[in-house]
Structures are given as C-alpha cells and as structure tokens.
Length: 162
Image (tube, rainbow, N blue to C red; front, side, top):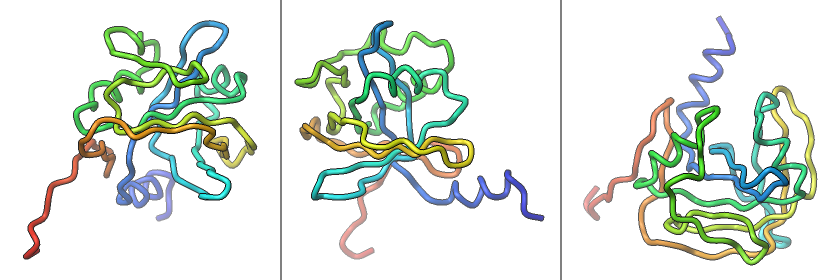
C-alpha cells in the first residue's frame, strides 16, 4: 500500500548533506537545519532548499529577504541536532562568524554561502525556495555530515582497489 510513511522511507534511501540556514532577524539570529538543499545553476549561482510550512523559524528568515548557508561537517552532528529541536537555544555555545552581509555562519563549517531569496513557491507541505548566492567561501577541511534513512552518517574513504 502506498502511504506517506512508505514514500518517506523510499526518499530516505537517498543520502543528502545537511546545512544550516541562518539569518539575522529583528528578533536576533534565527536558524534551522535543512537536508533538502541543492545547487541549481552556476550562471547565475542559484541554490534551492525546502522549508516545511509548519516551521516556526522559516517565516522569520524569509522575511529578511536572504540567509546564509553553512555546510556542516560530520563533526557537527550535535550542532545539527540542536538546530533541529524546537525551542532550543540554537546559537549558544558555538563559535560564530559573520558573512560580509552580517549573517551568522559557524566558524568551523565546510563552507558557507550568503544568499538573496529570488522566489518562494508553496508546493505540498513545503515552500520551495530559490536563492541567488551573492558571496561564498570554503571553510574547514573535513567530511560532510550525511543524512540517510533517518540517521546521520559520514563518508568513509575507499581504497583504490574497491
């Protein structure tokens, strides 16, 4: 039988990276963890992400007109878990730096993008967001944090013989 749970289970077989989406709002810094993130275009430099309609954080970020993306490393699983919790003090105890536009990004992420929202379109139970990257930088060396089948995972190096 085709159910919402079985659809989610099938999609969970697709491994994704995990990013933080952050902005400086009127109420202070706001952020959320997202695994529905992808590149769209190199020219112009566009990315896409999806934000749940039930998110209490996304409306505040959306209202600023832009956001920063931090690409998380496998050493940042605890950070990701904190940013996935409702009501958590998400910015406490972490080392933050600011993009040239003033948006917070973790100091130890694999890289960051500073983005300006171009379009937001409601699709099902999410908003599909297309944004233009206006600034970016690589960060710390490391392996990405991966989300697969409802769990966090990391990459392992393969030998040349594999």
